[in-house]
Amino acid sequence: MTRAAIVGSGPNGLSAAITLAQAGVESTVFEARETIGGAASTAEITLPGFHHDLGSAVYPMGVASPFFRSLPLSTHGLRWIEPDAPLAHPLDDGTAVMLEHDLAATAASLGPDGKAYQRLMQPLVENWPDLSEEILGPVIHWPLHPILMARFGLFAALPATFLARTLFHSERARALFAGSAAHSVLPLERPFSSAVGLVLSVAGHATGWPIAAGGAQSVSNALAGHLYSLGGRIETAHSISSLAELHDYDLILCDVSPRQLSRMAGSEISPAYRRSMQAYGYGPGAFKVDWALSEPIPWKAKDCARAATVHLAGTLDEVAASESAPWHNSVAARPFVLVAQPSLFDPSRAPQGKHTAWGYCHVPNGFAGSKLEAIEAQVERFAPSFKDCILARKVWSTAEFEAWNPNLIGGDLSGGAMTLNQLLFRPTSWQYRTSSRRIYLCSASTPPGGGVHGMCGHHAARTALNDLGLSQKS
Image (cartoon, rainbow, N blue to C red; front, side, top):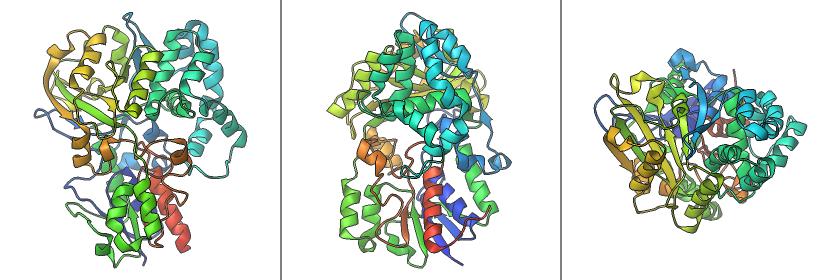
């Protein structure tokens, strides 16, 4: 029997192991930490009884993932909780512009921009199953739905600022789109910064932005449960410092960053390939705060309590300035802050009557300063007296992120900068393969990139199976 070692138990590592196990490959996952999950983990880090998602918390691409949807994850305890609205974006006038599940309702709330919004989104929403399969596939592939992809690409290739200012005339519509586009972690003036904004908006209307009951750990635990059911193994507290330790495995799939791979692989990869791994570029980092709260965040715009995700920055211009700053080694005075408030919809996250939330902003990679005051000031801007609700907090600098999870180089949560070159050739034109015939890369640094969807691991494993002449079983 073919034997495979998977280094790292994040969603991509677990997805790779499942894909291999489905094909009859004996699969063992090695995890350096005592708990599995990587950036899809949950823990008590402030006060007893307050369960915080350490990395990811909201899963628009998880619920849409073709691979996750093919697995019986509910059998292993995964339950998606869908908030009343996917997204809220409060404004300084005390209102919030909402991304509703219903496309028509969202369009109606945008006034004169509603028709343009509906024309842009409706064909993509109606074809979301096909679109999600295409965009979560390898970047370089023959499209199964060329007309749909041509329509998507026509708008996705545009800078988000250009698209928003061309299609929309009100600050409400522009701000709503800018906040979603900011998840690209690109300057919004750059080409292709619209792509993520379109995908997340369409996902909100089609399948939602759910949270996982019990926290991010539930996603990882369900994947692990299914792997066990297929005969796979997971060894925790087992750090792999050199791939030479895995000399008796036929395959090695690495859910690690290219920089880590270049250190771990040693002489098993060629000097040229090592140089390409060392040259791989990382994007802005994140500065994050987890809060234990005495009550829900007291939003001025009450609609914000209908969503687990809240975007804080006000206008398109503010979002654009904030997302451009880290690329110029600075941070905006009023940064764009992404807030998650899962306990509003999942009471298991905190003691009765209490709540959890987190917020983060983008900062230069490896940023050594603190943005705690700026983040909390942004929350207070839209939720006066917020600080009075704080019982405890845990602050994550870029260095603390990387120390906790070595994949998060310089605090980069996306597995590498989403520049045009690294979008097409992520991390290189080899994609999942390396110069070694038995070593593959399966982390978020491979297509289709960051996010909890498991597709990087799934595609890497399928590539390895094809190279071995093995077929995947259902």
